[in-house]
Amino acid sequence: MFSEFLDGFIHKVQGTLGAAVMGMDGISIEKRLPDPSINIESLAAEYTSALRTLSSTTQDAGLGSLEEFVVSTDQRIVAIHMITPEYFFFTLLSKDANLGRARFELKKGRYLLAKEFAI
Image (cartoon, rainbow, N blue to C red):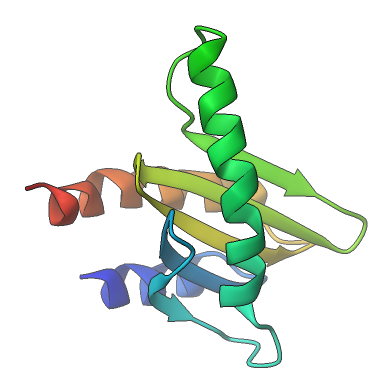
């Protein structure tokens, strides 16, 4: 199921440099790398600690659970969408990628894959 979703995401969102389903422990469950020169696992692991901090901050401030986190730099876009409190999608996009389409596909994927993590 994860493979199918990531393959579809890369096909639908042009400019995707990498996509992964990650755990908050920094370990990838599944990944796709159209650009094999990118170490998406290492990059995603770096963002995991920021996600933990942001998640805690939003909860403590009474804002609710963190759902999405987007970082846009002068070269790339990182879009992270939570699947559950312990798992998330991590995507690395080129600067000219369609961020709106990426966010839409990630939101769809959340509902599609959340049941895979249900106990």
